[in-house]
Length: 254
Image (cartoon, rainbow, N blue to C red; front, side, top):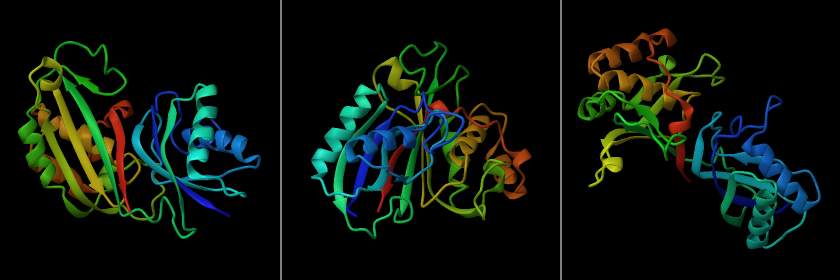
């Protein structure tokens, strides 16, 4: 069966997450429904990352198999047309036919996430569904310095959901940068970006890290406190988990 690789973006607000579930409408379910309409047979989609409820993507990667070979551009445009007709907040940005050995999840070498914080007194009028609004000024440099102490291979039990199904909590964190976005206007000057990269992440790991780094930024934790939380290997040692709407999957490497 011909296999297709899809690059997908979506607004995660109306969905229960990427993965198909019985308790609500998912990104995977919406794409499978649209693709099945094009292919005239049931379709199963496999994604690089299982984003949670409300989490967005500018570059999710997925693959699917069709019984009949179509030009990749035809698949992309036909599925997008059905997504638009259904009112879905999903778009396929690119489509290519690939070898059957390609697997969107298991072939991935790295995944990249961005977490966005709007750090100002005024509430967000435009970025309400894209950034975590925090009124109190955050110490970005302290957050970044503390974040660097988590790089490398560690047991991240503290920073994963109690519902995480991964067999091991050991992960290698390749990047965890905290920066204030440059800009001459008030909007850009108040945006703080957390960038996280790893081969794979645990359930809620990025949001857990973001929530704990926020405690460093507002002075309630130090870098030593963050390391102590990591070394505790205890979920109760984690700071409050940051909200999902500010998290975006921005890239997958193969």
